[in-house]
Image 1 (cartoon, one colour):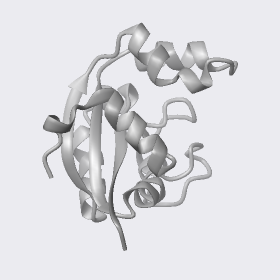
Image 2 (spheres, rainbow, N blue to C red; image 1 turned 180 degrees about the vertical axis):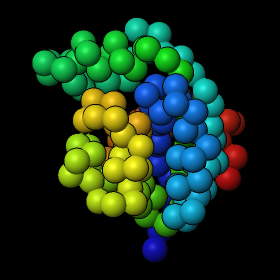
Image 3 (spheres, helix red, strand yellow; image 1 turned 90 degrees about the vertical axis):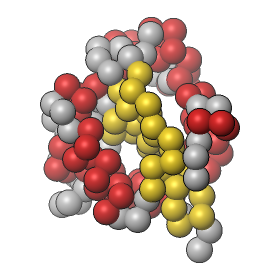
Length: 140
């Protein structure tokens, strides 16, 4: 199995409810290690740039507004097949369809306020990690 890195974000709905530690513990308990982490409050321009791939979608404005509504925790997670492992741990985007024990099933308020974001592929992880972190901020 390959050790890789992935990007993870704990969204404003979860940070407002003081779930940062509980969510991070789920990642760690499932074999992922936090190798970089910081708390940020996204400016509108940052949220628009980070989610630029969704610019033409009808939910883009609402997504940007939500992501600017409070602090987020941006993280780099490392472990065996980290991208896929993180996706499994997060669960389905819609918490009603997420498996029991996943972060979204346990903590999400709705499909929009689903507590976490994670990269969907190694290429996406590289881009998203690079958006928030320099190499010197990642300590393996």
